Image (cartoon, rainbow over all chains, first blue to last red; front, side):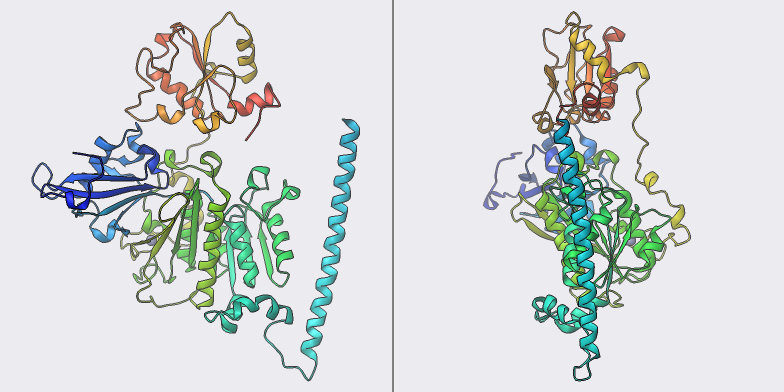
Length: 116
Length: 467
Ligand SMILES: [Zn+2]
C-alpha cells in the first residue's frame, strides 16, 4: 500500500485512489497534513468492497502517527463530535460506515469547534 | 513613579467625566432628533411614512437591494433577535444586525471585558476593560444606531433562565463558546420554535449552521434539524478546546460572526422566522471556513431532522417543564476543577524557587505547555514536552525506565517538577509519569507545581509575561 500520490489513471482493479481530508483540528493527529491521498485495496480481507468503516480502522492503524487514538476513534466508532462527509455530503445520507468507497471519493473528517 | 500615577489617575478621571458629558450630549441630540421626526409626521401636508427620515437615509443602500426593499426593511424593524454571547462572534454579528436596523436586539453574557478579548471582540475597547460585556457592547451599538431597542441580560444562559429569555425573541444567534451552552440553546429553541443560527471558531477554522429552520414543532419531520440531530452525543471533554487554550485568529471568528448576521438578515427579510413550510431545494447545509484551506469556504450537505432525536423528534422526551432540571454540565461530562493529586504530590511556585536556588540538588523542570506557548516565554533550564504527547495508549513520551526526553546526565533519583500554564495539565502529566513507573518505586520525587506559571507570576516573578 502506498501513501504517495496515485493519479486516477493508476487505479488498477485491485486498488482505489481516494482523497482523505481532516479539518477542525483533526489534522493535528495526522502529521499536521489536511490532505492525504491514499490508495486503498478495493476488497477487504473477506472479499467485500472496502467501506468507510474499514477506512477509519486503516487510518487509525496505518496513517495516524499521533498516540491519541481516542481523539479519533472511541469504542470502534468515529468519536462523538466528528462529522464524516462523503463528497461533501453528510455520511448519514450515504449509509454511514457501510458506504462502499468509490474511485476518487473525497472523505472529509471534521471535528466540531466550540469556540466563539 | 508616584507623580506619574497621580497624573494617570487625573487623566482617567478627566476621560470618565468627558465621556459622561458626551453621553449627555448624545442623549440631548437624540431627543431633539426624535421631536423633529414627530413634528414632520404631524405636519398635515406630509404623508405618514413608516420609517423616520434618518432611517430612509441610513438603510437606503440596503433597501435598494431588490431582495430587501421596503418590505424587508419593515420586517427588520419589526424583528427581535437574541444574541447569546458578546464575544468574538457576538460583536460582529450584533454590529451588522444593528446596522441593518433589527428593531429589538437582546444580548446575553455574564462576563466582563478583558484585555485578551480585544484582538477579536471588536466592539469592546481598551477603555471598556473591566466593564460588563453586555454594557460595553450596547454602548457601542447605541452609538452605531440609536433607533433600536437594546435589551441586556447580564447573566449566563442557564436551564433555569433560558426559556424566559429566549421567549422574548423571534430568532437566536448562538455566539457562545462551549458545548454545554450549545445544547442548551438548541433545546430551548426547539421547545419555543425559534430558528437558530449557530457558529463557532477555533485557531484558523470556523463552522456555521442554521438549525431548526423551518422552526416546526418537535415531531414534524419537515422542520430543520437541531444541534442534537447533528451531534447526538457530546464530544469527549479532552477534545473540547477553547479559544483561550487553542488560540484564535481575530478575522476568522469575525468572518463567522458576520456570516451569522447575514443568515439572520436573510431569515428576517425573506419572512422565514415563522415559516411553516419546508422550501424545496434549500436543504440543510453546514458552511466550513478554513483560513488555510483550499478552497477556504466549503458548503456541506447535511442530514435532516433525526427520527431518533431526543429533542426534536416525535419521540422527544424534552419539555419546557423538564428544561430547568436539565444538567448540561453532567451531560457534557464536565468534571469539577481538577484536583487529582495528593497535597504531598504538589509544591507551591515559591517553594520551587527555593529548590531552584539550592544548587546542591539536581532536578528536572518539565514544562508541558504546547511548543508554541513555550516559545513565547519559558523558565530557564526547563524541558518542553507538550502534555498532548503524554496522552494516548501509544505515547512514546512514557517509556518505562528512562524516556528519551530525560537528559542522560540526570540521576535516577533526581526529582521531576511539572509545570504548565494554569496548573491543570501538569497534574495529569504528573500522574501519568508516576503510573508509567518513572518514580522508580518512590526513589524519585515527581511533583506538580500548583497553579502553574500563573502562580509563578503571582508568587515569584511579577514581570513574567502572562499571555
Ligand atoms: Zn433534533
